[in-house]
Structures are given as C-alpha cells and as structure tokens.
Image 1: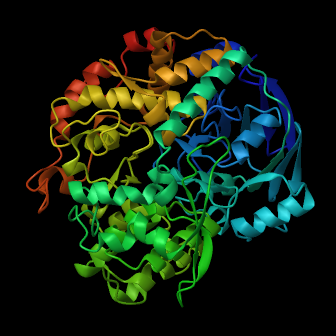
Image 2: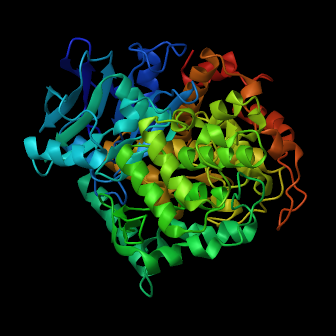
Length: 609
C-alpha cells in the first residue's frame, strides 16, 4: 500500500496482548483513513448500544493517508469510540507531533478492546509494541506523565495520555498528546481511563511510501509557494494571534456566546481578544508537524493567583471560560485552560458547564450551599476553582463532571443546558448563524463546529461569504461542509489550512487540493465524485451508528432558548434558530426518511447494506 502503511495494532487489554492485522485495502479506499476508517472499524467491533465506559466499548486511534507526510498540516489523528457524554459515536481530533510519529512507527490504526485489570500504557518503538505497567503513573497529571514516560522509554518519544479527569471518569475528559494538544470532545479520555489505559507512547522514524513521490513533492511545493506568496507582506493572522483572533468576527457579527448564550455580544470582548493574549502573555508560537501556519500559543502568566505556563488558550476556550461565563480576566481564563490541559479535560464543555451553573445559581435554582460559595457570572476565581474541583470530582465538581445536560437535569431545569445531542455548543451563537444551528443539531457527535463548519462562509467569508441570517439556502451548504470535513478528517489534515488552501467553491464546496494530494500519495485514483461518495459513506456510517444506538429526529435538536427566545440585541436581534424549516430539506438531501433514518436505498448506494 502507498500512503497507508497497511498495519493495524489490535490491543486486547483483558489479556494484555498486542497483535498485528493487515489493513484491508478495499476498506482504506472506501473510507479514506482517520475518521472514516475509525468509524468503519468501530461499527465492526462493538454494539452501538453498549455501555461507553464498559469493557465492551472499543477505542480506536486512527491516522490518515496524509498524516506524517509533507502535505501541509499532515499532522492529525482521530480517537473514535462511543461517547460517555452523549451516548453517540465520537471522533475526537488532535494534531501536534504524536500522530506523525505513530505513522512513522509503521501504524495506521490502534484498536483497544476490553479493560486491563490494572493501569498500563502502550509503548511502540519503531513498530514493536508492548504493554507496560502504569501503576506509578496513575494519579499523575498529563505533563508529569509525559516527562516520566519519556524518561523510561526514549526522550524523543511522543506521548498521548490522560490525567486525573480521565482516571476519575469525568464525562468530558480529554486525551492530551505532546503535553498540550487535545483530543478533547465527548469524553474520549474517560473511555481511556475506564480501560485502565494511562497512555500511548511512540517512537518512529520509518520513511513513508508514496505512490508518485515526484508529483506529491510538486504539489506540496506549489501549495507552500502559494502560501508564502500570500503572506509575504505579513504573517498569517493565526500565527500572530492564534484562533483567538476569531473573537473580533464573532462579536462584531453578534454570535459571540455571552453568559450562557443569553446574548451574542460581550461588552469586554477586547480584554480576551487574541491581540490582548499576544500582548500580555505570549512567549512564542508552536506549529504541529508539517504545518506552515504555527497557530499554537505558548504563554506564561505571572498574575498572582493565576500563575502558570503552557499552551493556549484558543478561541473556543476564550468563549467558554470568558464571554460565556461573563469573565473578562484573561489571566483567569488562561489559568483555567492550563488546568484543563494538565488534568485532561475539554475546555469547551468545562467552561460551558460552569456557565450553565452560573445562570442557574443567579436564578436561585442552585443554592450557594451546593456550590460552597455564592456563584455569579463574572467570578474569575470561580472558573479556576471549579475547574480544579471538576478534574478531581471534588464536591460540586462531581456534578460539573457530568456536563451541563446532566447538571441541569439534576435540578429539573434542562432548558438551561446549551447542548445538542448532550454535547455543549462551540463558540458560535446559532440564532445569529442559521447554518451553524443546523450543523449543531445534525452533527453525529453532538454539537460541534468541527463536523462541518459553516462559520467559514457565514462569518469569515472563506472561501465565499453567505448571509448568516438566512436559512432557506443552508441545508445544501451544511451537507457540503459536513462531507468536506469528512474528507479533511479522514485524510489526516488540519481544517485551518485545508479550508483556505485546499477547498474550492464551484457549484458546491469541494476539497479539490486534497483530491490531488490523496491520489499522488495513494495511487487510488479518486475522482471528485468517488471522493465525495466516500465522504457520504463515512457520514452515513456515523448515522447508522446513531440510529442503531436509539437516536432519531427528536435528537436532532436545539435548546428551547435557541428556538423560542429571540436574540435580545446585536446584528441578529429578534432572530431564533429556524431548525425545523431546515431539517426537512436536509433529510431529503441526505437520503434519510422523515425520522432521520438513512433509507435502504442510501445504504445500498454507499455500500453499507
């Protein structure tokens, strides 16, 4: 095989064995890699009705055919499993150096099955794999775990690990690789902890075999030359300010979620903007493997009470702990971000769950005796303290550790949880961005901007600008973006580069540049039609998982606040999310019936019958 290395590691944690399977070439072609192959193999491995934290659930780490290559941003991998936060399938994405190292060690995918009777970690050295005891690592944070594992294996090894949050079953625990890069959403770290798997460490240096190396190099050179020319007069904004630069666009458009999505503009937004982060706390930037952008923020805070250093925060963290909690203290937001990285938690769900608690506390629903103090929007010390408590499931943190849906249900007020399919919204207010409303509701993993992000066309104008307040044209656009993200995630690329440089608007949004790179790398000979058929197959396979797990149209939903309460102010004042008007057309385009189930005809078309 070319592009793929052709090897799957199958780790049976019950028996503590590691075996090697050959990657099925037909499956690789049909599902591309990464997210796609992970979904296919998960469907083969488990019953979608299984307990997400039970031994019967499997967890898959999957790279793509462009992971580890010179393709710009060829640095991504996916963690695919059944989510304990939502009960749905999830495919959590991360970059850094770990994914490329895994590929260069001769591994396309790792399938973890069962549960170890005691803590272990997996060590892969140039393709040779063994399980080692991790009893001495249990209880350590992700940074300490990284240091200790590298000291006892190879100082150049790359490590993906969980922290105390994953060990203690926080339902939105993340897997942290390269210390501060997160496979963050949906609780993949809790699944890893339930398996008594502390970490995966890998060292690899094998060259990757490509179908047409000369053509691949030509394509890469052309892409990088074009990128350099476009930024010859100034570095890309993401390098200067990170994803936090997005704050300007969302606040201006009125979709910057504020105080648990009660409004879409934050009066102190400039205090937590990317420019403020750069000026106050930035010490350098960091790039993932093969990335020309370098958006990673290396920061250090020396403000008393909030001291720390590490990576971040990113835009989503600034929204979740900042505007959504009514907090304008950038030092506090950054400290909460550091704690999430070290304890191993998703910053979006953590911040959004605190925001949910803040609103219910202000309305008298959560008494101060439950929290331990009088909780209010704007409390900068509270976001840090509650993050710490949640990571260790201490006191009120044990309730927060279940996410905002279960928190709100605990107090019989589910309407205050800003979730879809049980997962918290990203940093875009769906009342002011109709495409995002539909994308949240139909995302297979629950609310996510990374399963097809119409903010690119609705807010950023990339590659074209479309009115965010219209809804009649959005079903087709959302389908296009969801399918395009299937290709990006499965190829092993980062959306930040891909959307701007490898995706072109024709009559529809299409990943033209990725098509050429995949063909040069793999020799499969995809056409645009067959590549998008693969994307449709991946999305349909995810929907098949959901339907089998008991999800239906009622779960393609948004909170009542989004559907019934008009936006109170800003550019989208008076708007609600027109979800029902969009769902019928969306289902028709997808080939699903009126209950959101793929039809037998669609299953036959994509080869999932």
